[in-house]
Amino acid sequence: PPPPPPPAVTAKVMVKVTPWTVPRASSLPGGDPFESIVPVAVKMAVVEYVERKRSLVAPAFAAADEQSDLLKGCLASMSLPGALDALSTTKAESATSTVPPELRAKATTVANEGGVAALYDVLDDIVTARERAMALHDEVIDLLDGEEAADSARRERWGNRWPRSPSHALAAGLRREAAKLVGNLEHARKSDAIVRKTFDDAVDQLTLLSGPAADLAAAIPSATVSPDAHSPALRRAVTDLRAALSAVDSIVSRRHNLRQQLSDGEEDESAQVQKALLEADTEEDYPAIFDDALAPHRQTVAALQALGDEQETVLENLSRANDVFTDATRGLGDSSGRTKALQALETAHGTWRTLRDHTREGAKFYQEITKMLESLKERATTFVHGRDTELKELEAALEYHPAQPQPSHQPSYQQQPPPQHAPYQPSYQQQPYFPAAPPP
Image (cartoon, rainbow, N blue to C red):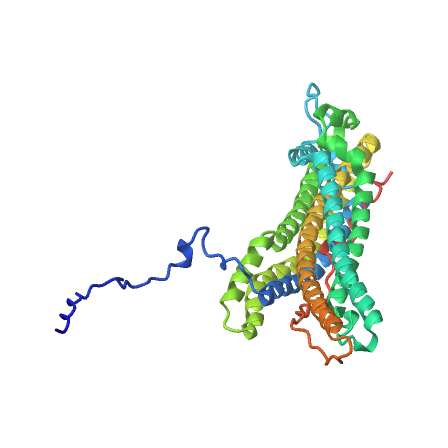
């Protein structure tokens, strides 16, 4: 008889289908791994923005330095404010009786900001930053030289069968950029030498300003006041001259604040520009982003330039007030020694402000150029890696087929061109004010 039919197999679900949800990048361990990646084009655009800002700011800083030098020269020629401070007296029993209140306040400011020790530190930091920047430049050149030497050796070995473009042609853009940056570093080195000499020349007076109050008082002769020192004519002359000097101080203070507005917050500003560039639809939107970011700086530059016109009026008023003061002090006791000592300390205080501003700008310059050199090294490393990989592939092909002619080989990588911008110079390269010797 035929066999019985097999028992029916009951259908069962062996695998359950469930919908798959793609996890959000933010939920991954460590966050989105691609979030911090910035396209090379955006990085280079940020560098271009920094260059555009520097080309706007550097001439304004140069003009401001010239105006400051003119102002300090005029003060030195009038022996101000030393001649005015020489009339100031305090209680004889005070340990600082020879120090005018205005100069004592300036000395306190210098001491509170670190005095000579702080300047020594920042000058040493600038040397370290310059050496680091030069080392980065040398690393870039070593990378390019090593790649070119390897290519030249293979070209010599294989002769006309070596199909690649010469290294010197492909790396020309990188080398031009490196040459421009090292040129800026050389200019900065010369400026650093000027700043250092200014510091060395003024270090004794700066040490007095930032040192103990007793040492400062001991360096200043006591005031010699005649019976006519409190005459109404002299009091009016002193009041008018102090008002004129107050206007000078206002010019100096506002100029310093405007320079700081142009210099401070550059790192945060670059981050904001980078964010705007990343959100842009196309690279054609980049110039508009640059213009928007530079608009506030153009206003600040205009305000800085306007101070030059205001300074002319202030100096005219100061000259008239000083003439009246000079006439009113004729016949008073001899205070030339006190005037000379006070003027030297006042000049040292002006030198300290100049050194403070220039060293800050120098430190920021090296911070910026170091970032540019790091970007250049990154691009040079990518270029060299691509060339090395290509070299090994071509040489392996030639060794495997020694008699087979090789077609012209096009590299699979493309070198990013450097940003197109005008060369820049560090804004603090302008020669700092070299204080004139006080009049005898």
